[in-house]
Image 1 (cartoon, rainbow, N blue to C red):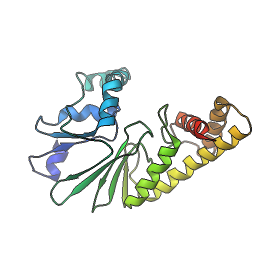
Image 2 (spheres, rainbow, N blue to C red):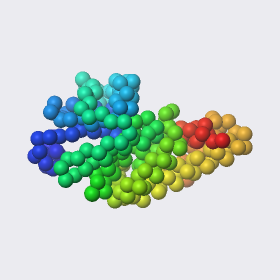
Image 3 (cartoon, one colour):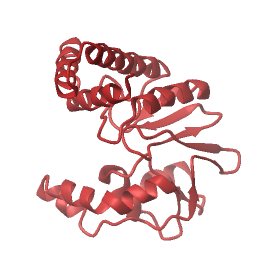
Image 4 (cartoon, rainbow, N blue to C red):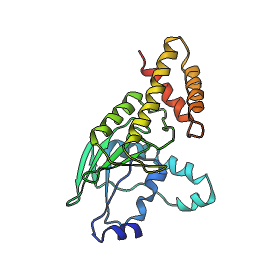
Amino acid sequence: MREVAKLSRNAEVYVASTHFHAEHTAGYLAFPASAKCVNSRVQEAEFAEGGAQQIQAFSRRSPMTAELLQGATGRRVDIAFDRDYTLDLGGVRVRFVVVGPTHTRGDTALLVEGDGVLLAGDVVMNQSFLAAGAATSMKAWLAAFDTFDKMRPRTIVPSHGTVGDASLIAANRAVMTTVQARAQELKAQGRTADDTATTVQKELEAQHPGWRPVNGVAAAARSAYAEAL
C-alpha cells in the first residue's frame, strides 16, 4: 500500500494476479475492502480447487512463511471475465488475456497499453526454464508467445527474475520449440514418454547450466510427447 500511495492517491484500486499460486495471490488481503478484484473465471476455479492447498504447502516451507500466510484466503471477485478483458483506468488501459493452459490453466497476462509493459506471469521468464506442469499444453504455450508478439511489448515483467525487453519472448520460444522438436523426434524413434522426458531434461540442463526449475523441462517434454502425432 505504501508503493500504491507513491504512484497515485486515487481512492479506486484494482487488484489482479497472473495465476492462482500462493505467492501471487495471498497478498490480496493486504488491500482495503474497497479495492476491486479482477480475475478470470478459470483462475477463480483453480483457486477454489487448489488455492488452500497451495497456501498450506507454502506455509510449511519455514516459520516465516507460515506467519506471513496465517489466515490467508481468496478474495471475492468483483469483475469476472472469460478469456479477454480490458480495464479502463482513465487514460490508462490494461488488457487481460488468459493464455493457459501453460504454467497453470488460468495463466493471465496483463498488458499496460501505451506504456507497452507486459506482466507475463510465469509464461515468460528471464534465463530460467519455464515451469511446466501436468496441465501444460505445449501448443497453448507456443500460442501464448504468438499472442505476446502481437502485443508488441517494450518491457516484460516476469513473475520471478529480472525485468527484460521483448527479446525474452523469442528466447523462451527457442527453448520450448527445442523441447517440442526433440520430444517429437524421440517419440518417432519409439522412445517412451518417461525416457523422452528424462533425456530432454538432461540435454536442456547441459545447454543452460544454472537455469532452474529443471523439472519444468520434463513436464514440457511430456506435453509435447502427448501432442505429437
